Length: 410
Image 1 (cartoon, rainbow, N blue to C red):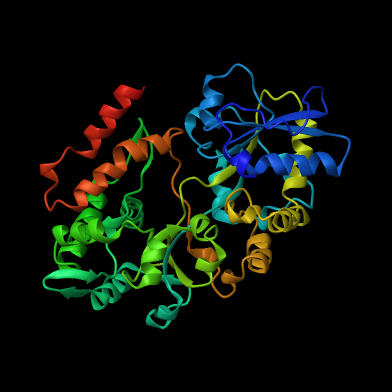
Image 2 (cartoon, rainbow, N blue to C red):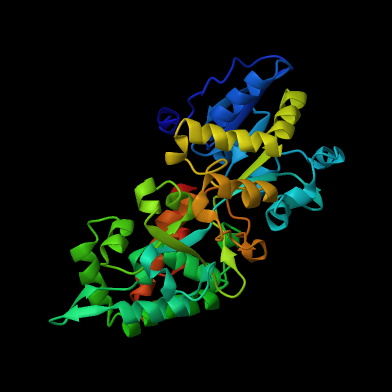
């Protein structure tokens, strides 16, 4: 599994030899699909699936003249990529393949103009983690919001000689938490040319982050000094040592921590109101219009979404210990509600009594296929600078940063 996770761009995973109407080619950015294809090939003799790994299947679709039969990965819903897929509505004519088995809001994201072009595979959500002996401090067994994090963090802060020796939490420790803050303030990043958002909501979100720092943790300088002095250890170690009260991470990161750490940590889903913002890289699967083996592709999709099949995935992951480096199904919670709600707690006992409430799950908007680079190069640096500045006029605007990045990167 570790070797597959490290495969470079464009390397075939060689699950089988492709060719002929009974063989389908699957492109993915999820190494787990190499094993899924192997299990499928061994489970029956009629069809075969060959898996090819790409860092960005969406980009590969745009630039290729050779097309796969199936694509499973992130960023497939953008305008430039969804045109490559065929509708999948006919799959639901089989009574064993039910729309009601999927998380409805995830399924709806793959529905375009009334037709189901993409099916959700997996998702992740952000959590706040803390030492398990601090669980009684939190008021809700499922979620935690900004105001409670601020209050508990301020009470936890400790100074000596004017210097913090203990700090509850800072939104600026991790620029990804600042992005979550923006999401929960309804900044609503979405695909445009290349991106659109609510500028006023963004200002409110970043003002909120700056005021959090200045009122709860004294100043930007105090936070920076604390981070420089103590953040040579990973956040989970700082939590367990008592140096900080809270840390932020995504669910796939939490559930691939070493078991000894997970057993010592508690967690809550980050939420405001009734919204838990799902990570933007949720996995989806579709059938390419120009695929040469639609029967094999359809057979694999039916098989993949059987609940018994996904139970086997989880069992295999536990047996070969690949769950230590890959979480759940395709790197996240399954998009099938019965699998996540009924099976996942059997394999991840920490989820017992802590499942994310279905009606709180809030998927992101449709984003451009190159979202990862755009976010890392333009958006997160802006959020980090803006959270340290009470006046946005003192830094380059996000619009300018995105324009500059787009001009340089096409």
